[in-house]
Each structure stands twice: as structure tokens, then as C-alpha cells.
Length: 347
Image (cartoon, rainbow, N blue to C red; front, side):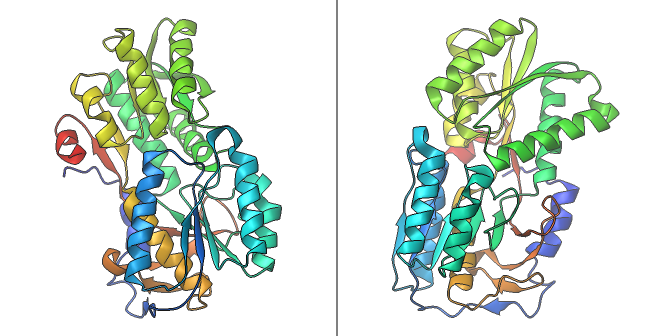
């Protein structure tokens, strides 16, 4: 598959995922008994189902006799629902909760209470912004590099000049907010993008119908809009469908972060010429290995600690450059999808 690997990501991967760099990586002992919960932002999103597939693979591989639950709230009740599940996990003495956070720092009190009760909290996909109540964050890619990828795709699609709007998920989604901030910083600091104007940021709540309508509202509000950048798999698919349904694909393009299986038709017909993503099955798999190691006491969660994550190789806990005092494990890398590679990836 054709990939566009960023220098920043490659450098970080040398620290986080190179088996050669850390000869003393710990091999986790299988068969330890620990109950764990994989907690997505909410249920009903394909990428979270894929993350669960990866976690289930690792669960079997590590021969954990404990239970792995895939639990999440509804989209309409995501924040309160995540807090409730976290609180219940602590009272049930779960070994670990693997959290894709959609509640911002509102989740901190329940996460800290869980840690006090002995339930480890490992975040993935979307961290706790402050890092409080979190043992470590399993980052899919370097968050700063996402801004560069989106800026480069916008530059390519717009030919270096035009108006762009962002259609994000929810206002409290830490990952989305960090990616948008990185994009804004890249646009403002690099003369390469001086011809691109970011006119608005709106939220579709990671719900298809809401995102679809917000995309159409953007076109109505900005008649000369050239691109909708949606760093969410729900938003990019809904925006693409909206442009297709209204016959606007020649005028308003869509880009962002999406699944090849959901985006292939929109890429081939020109609605979404370029988009990017990583492998969510790998993310769930790596998150499970991390949480298993920490919840069984084999990993302390300290900076500099390295371990072997099965088929994915060796990883090391490092300081999170975007959240002072917090820690992360960096997975990576991106794949940028175009007409050249999206059909093969969608199979």
C-alpha cells in the first residue's frame, strides 16, 4: 500500500516502535487473570468495532482467563455515559478500563477514583486532556503531525488557494481538538498555506444525520467554500454523501480522516480525493497489550519502560509532548488514501 510517512512520525516511531532501539524490551507473561473493559466514545462506530477486534485478538493471544468487555454509551449520552461506566468499573474492581475519551476533563474525578480503587486507566484514540487519572495514552499517531497531514491534503486538493471549513465530532473530544489546533498552527505558521483560509469550525456530534446537515449548512453559509475538512470517520462520510447528494462534488471537496471501506466510492468519484487514517485493529491490539501489562503489574507505566506487543513489535513509554506531565505510547503511521490505493485498502 502506498503511504506518505511524515518525518516527525518516523522519528517518533524510532523512539516508540523500533525493536532494535530497545534490546531490553519486556516480554509480558501470558495467562495472568485480569478483567478489563474497552470503553469507546460510544457504540455504533465501525472504527471502534475494529479496535475491539484488535483487543479481542490480543486477549486470546495473552491467554487472559479474565473477561474482556466492550461497553460504551449511546451517542446522545456519551459524556455522562462514559463517566457512569468508569464509575461502575471501579466499584466492580475491574483490572483496567481502556478509554477513548469523549468527556474531556469531566472524566477526571471518576478516572482518579478508579485508579484509587485499583482499576488502571489506559486511554487510546482520545486522551484525558490534563492527563490526570490516566496511566498512559496509546496514541495512534503524533497529534502534531496530524495537523501537517491535513494541511498538506488541503493544499493538494485546493491547489494551494481557497476557503476551508472544519466539521469535527464533539466540542469535548480531546483528540479532535488537538488535531484542529495542530492544523490551525500549521496553516498560520507555514507560508506554504498562506492561500488557504479557514473560515469556520462546526460540530456534527459524530452522528451521521447531524454531520450531514452541518455540512450542507456550511455550504449555504459560505457559497465560495472549496473544502470541508472532517477529522472524524463519521463526519467525513456524511459530508461526502451530502456533497454527492446535492451534486456539489465538483465545487466542494471533502477530506479528513476516514475508513477506506466507507470512503472508496467518494474517492473514486472525486468527492473526497484524499483522506488519511491509521489501523484501528492495531490500535485496539496495542492498547490491550499495554493495559494488560499495567493491570497485571508487569509494567509500572514509567517513562522509558519498554515491552513487546506481540505481532506489532516493541514499544516504549515516553513523555507526551502535547500534554506536559502526561505519558504516551506512539503507534503510527498514517496512510494517505487516493484513487491509487483506496480500492485495494477497502477490500
